[in-house]
Image (cartoon, rainbow, N blue to C red; front, side):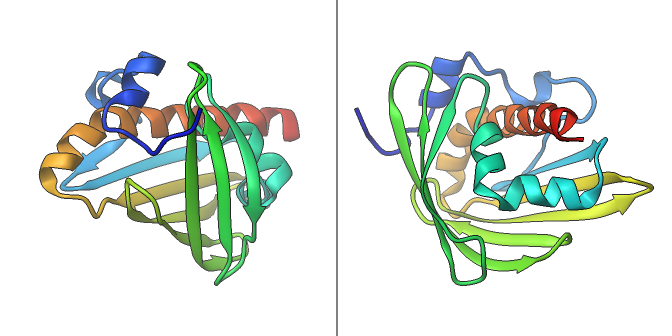
Length: 172
């Protein structure tokens, strides 16, 4: 089964909570913007590899309970990343990211080209052998749509970062 993202579906099927329900380090939700900052116990080069190598990205991308299958992976400026997120209820969510900028070990800029539409920037900063990762997403949908989307997007993004942190412990 395959369909486009629908507002609230991810939250319902994954049992996600509102962003404000999380402990310290929760996503910062602004006007049509979600930013997550994590201090990861891994070197910046390894964290960057986890984002830019298909064999790593497919292991952590998406909230808890989701699996990701890559269909096209061109992690370079002008490239495209097409993948399907498989929900725990068996529903498939096709995604397309247009890659705008890749600065090794520093920054990745892309635009999610299917609903919900958003440009995103991930920055990687060295912090004495650890990595400060900031992931900022600005949604292009209306305020009303964003108000619904943030109920699942923010906690889903937090869970995705949790999965990244877990994978990094196995890679170090």
